[in-house]
Length: 111
Length: 113
Image 1 (tube, rainbow over the protein chains, first blue to last red):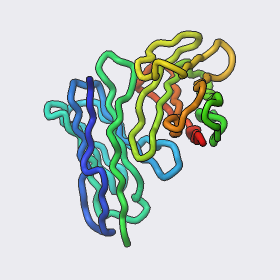
Image 2: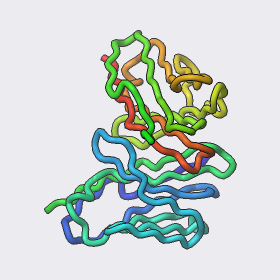
Image 3: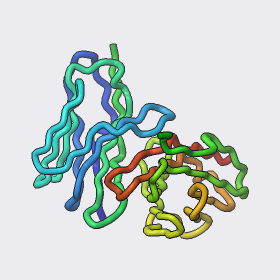
């Protein structure tokens, strides 16, 4: 059974600092997604990572994928308050038709 | 092109009642997925449907839960005899072709009192 684990689960940081969220998964996967969720809202797609070594950046967020290590990272650069949200990674099981989500990382950025 | 629509957005049911959650996929999408999010947790896959067919229901509880996606009309997730543990946000996602292009709806927040 595919397991997806994120860490940390809770992260409180100051504006202007850098930090990284990690996403480990246990079996081979076709692709990996990062989503953002604000309280009481739906999921907003941030990145889709398709292959080993893939790196994508949007504003202060950068995601990377290492399929050999079964690890993805979401790096936050010079955090701002607007990035406060819960971030999920999700993985597609090879040959299956469903997403398996991590537990989520609740990020709070303090002024 | 309207996004995935879910209704109701909020639903309150007493224990023992039935809950019906509706999902209208995006135009042209024939694949629907239902996920459940318990408080403070990630989303958990429940069921994957195509028009008139259940493809994968491996995440559905064995009792009280059912899903359908008829030829016409929205997909329905039905929960019979709700219990407090069913309180959660239920999200549906639709896709035109496969699991790789899922677009999520706004969710239905079910509260069981």
